[in-house]
Each structure stands twice: as structure tokens, then as C-alpha cells.
Amino acid sequence: MAHKAGPDRSAAFEALRIIDRAIRQVNRMRVRYRRREYDLYIMSDHGNTPSVPFSWVHEGTLGDAIRAQIGEPINLVELVGAHLDSSEHARFMLDEVRGIERRLSPRLRRISASARLYVRRRLLTPGGSDYNLSRQGDIVVSANGPLAHIYFNVADRPLDLAEVLLLYPQLVDALLSTPGIGVVAGRAERRTVILAPGSGVLTIGPTGRHLDGQHPLDSFGDVAYAEAQLHRLVQFPHAGDLVVLGGMLPDGRVVTFEKQLATHGSLGGTQLQAFVARPPECPLAINTLDDPEALYTYFTARYLSDLDTGPGERLTRLCEMGTAQRFG
Image 1 (cartoon, rainbow, N blue to C red):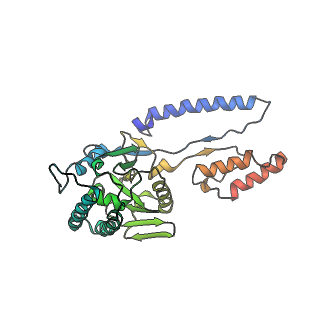
Image 2: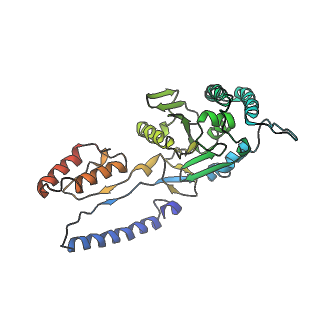
Image 3: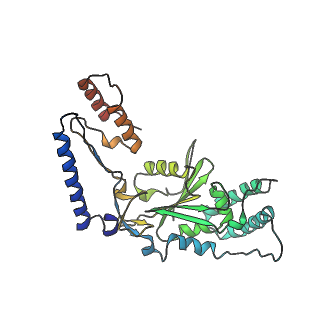
């Protein structure tokens, strides 16, 4: 209900009242059932941040913004009655990218130059190319709330950011110039490269992080948490070749790629503020919980381990664990 009407509308509060009545009924049954003791926990998996649909700040959808770039190439290689194999096409693209670099912003110019050298070594090695360039226009945009994954089906594997810059030279710069876009991130092998409009470049990898310029995640609050979560997401094998986050507006609303007035699923605002209501005799240190895995650790320790320990001793030790130990 809050998605469509907003988090502070009467319809959203009425939905909460219905849920409250259901919880009260469950708790009443728990208290009356004497054959076995039950603990009642009430949890949310996320909060909600007031939001603005992307189409309100930019005409059209995110897919429309991408289509406007991919559908109007700066240079067109046209061969009539001849077939151009991938290695020859790659040489044309590399020469084209070298010319386009002069029109890119300084930070993307540096990334593009590195990408061009990387791809030249990789593609022009015999047997090194696995691109199907006839599918260069085959693109999938999968959006959920303020988070979108973009997949380029030119290869049957995830693409590095360097390859995206080679195949679609102006797309990343265009996305960063599009109102409503907050972050564009991509892979660089085991590293993650994060960019934001008007900000610097953050690279996170197994050996540490490197920031060039202003932090691209400044507008999302806790930058250390945002870094860790975005790096983790981008490195999943099925994450998009580009990961795009909706931007934060000055009034605290976040841009969402769905038609929603309250949203979740990304960074920014109260969508990150979940809650846990727990039995008072065993306080859980909520501020130490970073993700659902930490709750799993707690519940496993609380209810599945040390079954031969006396109830009183076990309860005391687990309460101490909940208040003193950081899970995860």
C-alpha cells in the first residue's frame, strides 16, 4: 500500500492496523497454548524511503534512456554484401573509441583508455574474442525499485566495465548525465568500479580500495556500509554488467525505476531501517546487525545449539551473546 500511496498516507496506516490485529491474535494463541513454549519475534526485512518515479524526473523509462544512446550511434560501419568477422570489427571499434575518448569527461577518458588497451590485448589475440557483435543491440534492463541491472547479451558471460565502455563508448557517460541516476557501477575482474554524477571514481577490490576525487556514495549516508553492500552485489555472478542506483534528492526522497511513492531495494534513506521486536528477557543488540545472515546466526545459536544445557543457563549465555557480540 505504501508503494502506491506513500508511507504516510491513511491507507498505509490502515494496512498496519490490520497487521497489528493479526499479530495480537497470534500472540494470544501463543500465550494460551500451554503444551509448548514459543517465543514471538516480529521482523521487517526492510524499511521504506519516500520516492519519486524516474519518469517524473526524466522523460521516459531507464530503458528509453539507454535506447536513446544505443539507437543513435555516432559512427556506423556499413558493409554491403560482405561479412565482417569479430576481430576486424573489433579493430574498427578500437579506432572509433580512440576518437570518442576526446569527447568524454576526464575521468571516463582515463578509464576508456585503459579499457581500450585491455581489450586490444584480449580481443586481437587469436581465438580471444567471444563476442557475438550481431547481438550488440540485445540488451535487458531489470529494475526493482531504485535498483536496476543492465545486461548486454553480446557475450554469454558477464562483461567487465572496460568491455562495456568499448562496446558502448558513450553509454556510461550518458547515464551519469541523466537526471535521476545516482550511481553506475560495474566489474573490473574481482574489483568493483563505482561512479556517480559530478563525483570521483571509487575502486574496491580484494586488496583494498582507491578513491579518486569526491566519494560517489556520499549522498547515501553511511559510505562504509554502502561500499561493502554495493561491492558485494556487483560481484555476484548474475549481477548486471552495469548496476544502476536511483539518485537521492535534496528532500530525502530517492528516485525509483518503478511507479512508486515509497520504495526499497537499494541504498538511501529509511529503506535500510528494518526492525526486530523480540522477547524482553533476551535483548538483542539490534545496532550490531548488518544483514539477515546475522539474524540467522543468532537464531541458530538461540534455538539449535547446546540443547543439553539447562534452560536458565542457556538463556543467560545467549542473552549475553545478543548484547555483546557482533553477529555476521
